[in-house]
Length: 254
Image 1 (tube, rainbow, N blue to C red):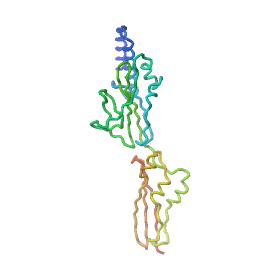
Image 2 (cartoon, helix red, strand yellow):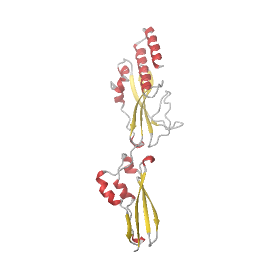
Image 3 (cartoon, rainbow, N blue to C red):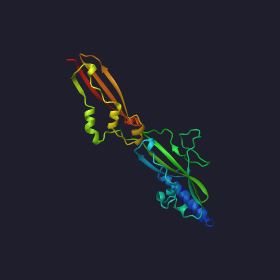
Image 4 (cartoon, rainbow, N blue to C red):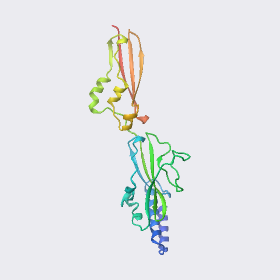
């Protein structure tokens, strides 16, 4: 369908040779816009867009907004804006801020009377699977059109124990069974902070602010044969990355 429209537009353009250079530049810009979406997200008459996907990070690590100067540089996005760049008409780009007053602040929607997606997370985003839009308003050949840079990803990496911590970690989490001890003299299990100190994560934010490790304990208190199981849950912001392990102490007063 796009190619049919393109042929019709080109035929019309041939019959309108008396039109100004501005009209030609506008046509080229809109054609590039439709082509961009046709190759990427599906045809969208509202503006162009670049997509960067498969980012292994939580919502706290969304890449920063690209500078306007990067978008306006010749050759950006396979020359997407080169027609505008080479035009004698005014070519401007400015970033569009998030609109916290929108009816649904989590859903990208119209801005400044122009159809497009506003800056912010798409509705339903979470740390396991998120989409974030940065929106720019582009003025080319007298027309204003939105341009969207779309980042998508999710935290696909669970916390792990670095190689340099492995030996100490293995000692720390070792089971101690069949001890000749009364229950009140049983070993003290590692604290949450001790376990957390052994782990790292691909999210700097979770390492500093997150509750990476939690602990619960199951106990059978009997000097004739006691057992205590300490269950640790290790997690980051993506719940599907969470996992558990346990440390077991057991013994009796022999």
